[in-house]
Image (tube, rainbow, N blue to C red):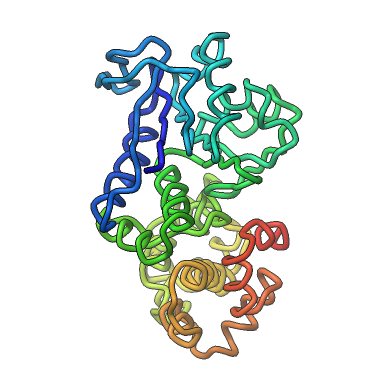
Length: 326
């Protein structure tokens, strides 16, 4: 039985705790023999109030306990929690003795306070990445990935990314089939690769004020990438004439309509290649490409990788793809 400890403190984000906890519980239900024994641990034990007001029942931290995996969640209370020398020392001790150490969302701040993340590649919620880098300059903070692994240390982006990380842990422990069964039970995306960006293409394109005009269109393309999306169709969804649409869309998003459609299709293809076993031809069809060769050219142009290489990179080392793209 693998002992999993989740640190809890006043003001913790409840989903940072509940997401990983439920994924591990569901894994136990899917396995012939339960494999995970999960404990909620706090400095004083007893009931601890979360940021949402719900209290969680916890056990008192025991420095002598040896965990397989330590999970440190985030939340608005993490900044005060890291001021507790007692808590930081306990987390440091538990982390050193554990096989794996995980920071969910802004839990990276508490884990960073121990000094154990120094020199490591880490990620946190996009809103806190700059702060993490400024307050802990010894860390190598990356803003894009959903989760990162550096040796035995794992860190994640915001909230639901903790589930993605735990699915990866479950897969590492029990194989892909069990992880996929858990994902299906939780009704989450089958398994997002860690290198997938925190922002999807449509969200990235909508960052500027002017691009908000086209949020409905961008969402429609993302939801139906396999549609034809002729210029007339896009202009109609946007409620503009073709001439006005073509001119204003590029000004608002910084890209032509065709370029945006291609980028959204490439993102869908990348996710399918790295999170499913679909054939390359099927991936191309679902992503909206009219042929494997057109998908190959588009992916090579945007990411610098062919479909086969993207699939291999996703299985081998997620961040290589993201670095190549940047």
